Amino acid sequence: MPLPDPVPQPASAADRPRPADPRPSADGLEALPPEFVNIQPGGGRVMSLELAWGAVRRAYLRTFRRGYVKRMAACRKGERNPAPHDILDPRDAKFYENQPGGWHWDAEDDPFTWRNHLGFARWGLAELLVFSVMWFAPLALWAAVFAGRDDFDLSEYWDGTITPESVWFWFGVVSLVPGALCVWFFRDPPRSIPDEPGVVVSPADGTIAEVAKVDYHPFLDGPAVRVGIFLSIFNVHVNRWPQAARVVGIDYHPGKYLDARDPASVTENEQAHLRLETTDPADGPPRRMVLHAIAGAVARRIVCILKPGDVKPRGARIGMIKLGSRTELLLPDEPGLMVRVKVGQKVLGGKTELAAYMVDDALTGEATDSFPPLTTRMPAAETPEAPPVPGDRP
Image (cartoon, rainbow, N blue to C red; front, side):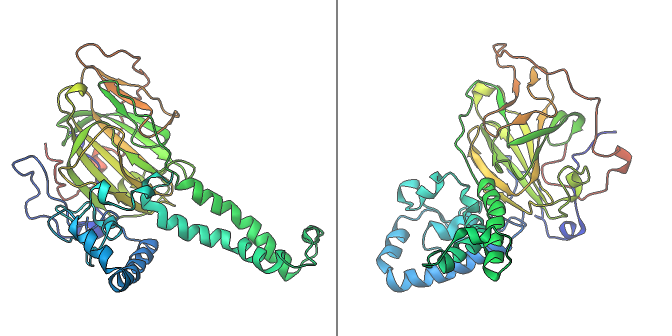
């Protein structure tokens, strides 16, 4: 019995409207599904705060910086405003860059490109600011109130005497730990991307949790190799493109937030599915691949900046999963495929060579023979019935 791609369809997702005809268009691309109203379809409190701040900022710009607004409008590109609010500059388009024909700016016209070089994920800067204030503020306020006194003596906080000041101080010290973890989580270090022909780089940082063969995948129209990567809260959570490829189709599925190490999380958690087709002749003939970004118990928001038709080079940033999660990559299992990772191995997104395809018999390297027997996430007989998913037809 052919094994379908185990795409979850919680009731909340199954009841949502889907395109009238999910089949690919003449150019082989699917329509962007209605769930993707922005790059973070799951929403979130911090996203709501950022959008609310945007309304205040736009009111300021219209009132006090009319010349700036006119200059931004003059160099704006795109066909329409995809946002539910006015777009005055690139900050207003941040959450809507995956909307077809949406307004945008070229890099030379964008005064905020410097934010891409801060060493932190651009899509997590608001969370970084909010969490930093939340965890670093207690000690900063304590220092502002007490540390400047003439009779201040730090040693009095170490003698075991409990006072309101000492409780405040130690709470501030302890809160530095989660604050530091938040800063560490949203980092986005540069990566040296391998340029060897045929190489498939890891789409995420983390630990290889699974390397398994799948007897049939409908989008790949044949057997596949599934590589699962577990991302802890200590890993970089920016997702990257495995090879130079274009996006054929995307799906988003709301769901639960089980621990990413729980096998049930693969079918029940919130996740996004990206179907892609390679574009670089140096990597061999065009191949289809599937990338799954799966939320975890702590990670509850998936960011995907792509839309059908987008073409990205190998190792390009394509979004992130915010706090602890799982990423999977399904590759066509064909002659010449060499898997270069094993279960338990640490990998770096965009840098570690996950696998490689033979290109003109010139590719060298060692293939792992550590595949477990053919595995599935659940017996085929227990695979839940699900509505058809665009692009997953044979």
